[in-house]
Length: 308
Length: 245
Image 1 (cartoon, rainbow over the protein chains, first blue to last red):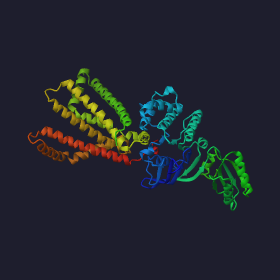
Image 2: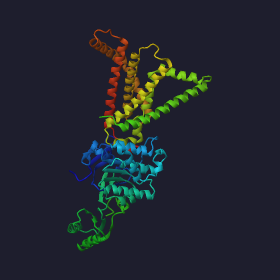
Image 3: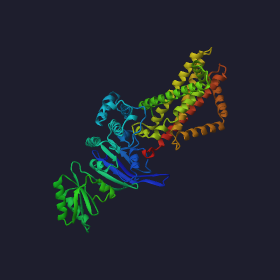
Image 4: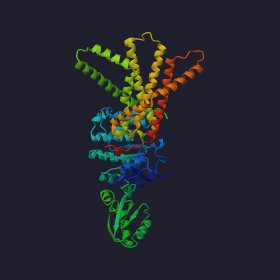
């Protein structure tokens, strides 16, 4: 049995009879409690990756499993909550109807419908006066909230979010971030696709950088309950081996070592200081060290490498 | 595969809305026609409407089912709202079946209303209630078959929106005309007449009732084939938000 709730391997997808590659051997794994961010320039394949993970598109090669079940099985679908970037609905629907409809579709008990729909709408902070109003009159922020309520109302274990804080005011964005983090803390797995790097940097535990359909870089962004620290050093022979020895000695087993640097999860700032001190002591010419979290823009612009 | 209650009720609500809009548009059209042509009283107009329903009968209802069902699934697919539904623990054949059932339910409601209007207007007029019920059942089956064909067309991805779908429907209609139904009907009539003689050896074959049964067999075949086709297409279709603006 896999430790991951969301597991995709070797996803390859082409369009127009194989002429346009959209994904090339992409793979992601998200464990319970983890939030994975997907970043990349427009046309990198983020939407295709999300659609493959959700089972809306069939990859030419590769597999997707949710909670150990094939993505197109009904068992896997009962795990899923999805917030699209743009919410679509029937014009006659009211916010309450929309969330109730999805509660019913998710197969939740009818007897608990009112209570669970109310709970979801309160969770996302949609003002009560709007619950019984037609969705077509909602603002962008209200649409985002009702969409999130729709995603959460089926009690999913895997949450897929496309630009979850888009259109929200700062207070709303903060509350949504808290909601997503609480969902993950409760044992859920989350995949977030967003261009809002600042928000993503504060939210995610892991980030993958997608470019031309390939995962160019994958980075553990924040340790569970700790800090993710980045260290860079001068290019020198045997640096990677020296760094590996230090990491082994300090028992930092989730570190990523790259050319000219590393990133690793440490318990606190004292742990970070210990790491840097040990690297210097091992003979590495450390030039830069600091927390990785919040530096996603650098990661993005460097195609996944510069942040290290 | 079974009917999904939420999808059925949701589709029924959408169809009811669309029917109401269609009926209101029709009434407004009739009133405008009366105003433009001048001198037509509202009473005469309502009588003309009932008369048209009675004379046009099933053809008018078939047309309404086409109009109502044109975007049954394709509209949801092109707007992007279908994705959220298909991500729920619901099989795609169940989704298709529920959509078809909702369209059929609306068609049957319209059929009953038409017959009620007919009865209120003219009564049975000496007709046998049994034959009346048989014709009603036949028309119900025919509308269910038409709804299945519309559902099938609605599952096909159309690049040019509903105009493209309409063009496809017209082409299919012409193709069917070219194939000439008569040959198929003759075969069916002969089969029904044979079955009649085997099952009811002491009763003379009634050509009128026999042709109703051949029609029913034909419609049942169309219904099953169209629904199976719609489900097969939906099983294979891919959806992505990248298609939407």
